[in-house]
Length: 362
Image 1 (tube, helix red, strand yellow):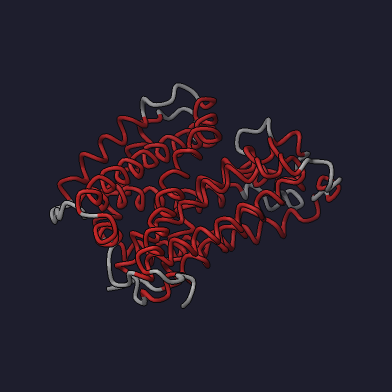
Image 2: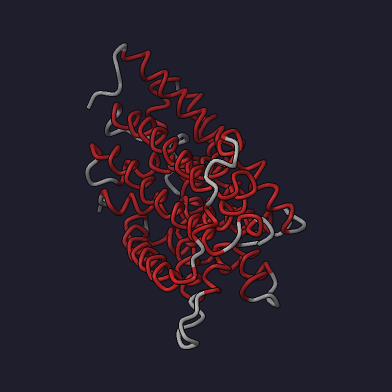
C-alpha cells in the first residue's frame, strides 16, 4: 500500500505544527511584537523555497531512497555516517517532543500527574502506531488534521467578536531587523519538512513530491499565520511574552453567552492527536535512518531501545520549563537548521554540479 499526495502533505503538517503552535507565538512575539505575522510570512516563504530544493533532490533521483541518493552522490561510507547523524537528530527531537508533551499536560491539564506517566503513554501510542505501519498512520493522521482544521475555524468564528484589531498597529513601528529575527524560530520548525525524504518510498506518485512538500508547508504556514494573528488580536503583543502557552490561552478565552464554553478541550484533543503523529514520525525517522544505510531489516529490535532511551532522556534533560523555552528559542533552531537546511543544500549543490544542468526544470 502507498500513501497519497494529500496524506503525505498532512504528515508534513503533523511534523511541524504541533510543537510550533505552542512555542512560535511567544518566541516570535518577543522579537517582532505586533508585526509577528510578517515574520511568519517570511518564514513560510523561506520554507517553501527549502521544500522546493529538498523535493528537487528527490525528484532528480526518483525511485531511490534518501540514503541511496547519498550513497550515489558521496559514497557508501558517507551514507552510513550521515545515517547515524540523522538518526541522532530525529531521536533528539523525539525526546524533546516527549518532554514538551508532558510539560504541557502537567502545567495546563493534569498538574498532579507525574511527567513520566505522560512519557510512557505517548511512547506506547507511538510504538503501536509504528507497528500498524506508515500507511495506517497516514490515514489516521488525515482524520486528525481534518478535525484540527475544523477546530481552528470554529474557534476563530466564536472569538471573532472579541478581537481587538488595533493590536496589529502601528505596522511600521518594529524595525525590519527584528522582524527578520522573529522569522528565525518558525523557520527552524518549518525546516522539518525534510521528513518528505523519508516518505518518498511510500508515495503513490513519487513524481508529485514537489507538490506534496509545497502543499504541506503552505497548509502549515496558513495555520501558524492564523494562530499568530488570532493570538495578537486577543492579547496585547507585550502580554504574549508573559504567557507560557499563548495559543492555548486563546482557546480558554472562548465563551458564548455562558453556554458554549471550555473549547480548550477541543484544542487539547486535536493537539494530542497531532503530537502522537509527530512523535511517531520522529521515531520512524530515528529507526529508518539507522537501519536503511546499514541494510538492517529487523527494525523492531531497535524500536524498543530507542523508545526507552527517549523516555529516559526526556525525564532528565531539562530541569524546568525555562530551560525548555531557552532550548526551543536558541538551541533547537541551530540544531534543526544544520540537519534540515545545510545538509540538504549541500546535496542539492552536488546534484546540480554532477548533472551539469539546471535542476529547476520539471
